[in-house]
Length: 270
Image (cartoon, rainbow, N blue to C red):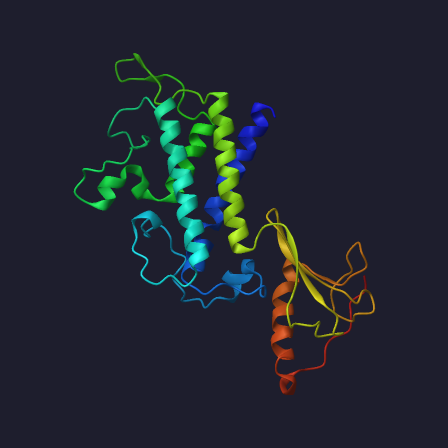
């Protein structure tokens, strides 16, 4: 694998971790989710006054007490992911960091003798988002050029360029952490039958398709004879894409209460 590809894949994995971290925090505080509805719909279906996804003020998992987490698997995954990314930042800082104490770009190591937990954690106290952004900066070789001082002299750059062997270690670590996070949230690439939820239009079997690089979709096993008002996919199945999933959620909710069901619209032309 060439250097540019390794950089791209590492940055993509780090950004994926940051983007899904709030969902993992929510998963820790809620019972394990069923297959349906897909977790990517959580923001749409969640009450507007829910504040659980505000992560900027949340302490890192490694510094928190967890007396009764609702989802132990999610907590274990979160702790492991934090440690992987934090340890990676320690490793990179030891190899490429030149900046002095007090520089906000600096990664500070743990200080076991500090008076309180946040002080002892060093830069880990800023949380996973900060660590991912910091590691991404090293992977992209940011701040590796000499800096001009007020007197015109050039000062040594805050960081050295990333050696190839450390880039590949960063890629390996970031992809492992991303993979565990996606699997824990059920967002990895998989095909899963939707349990006890037949198609409201034809009674066919519904299947949820997830992929880390695409929005989820649902297909019906009946094929073109299904009258659902959604298009056919390349395999001739009715398919609910991202824009249609909320309507499918509503239709399934109505199907759970037959007395309140209304006539379904006919399929639109495909």
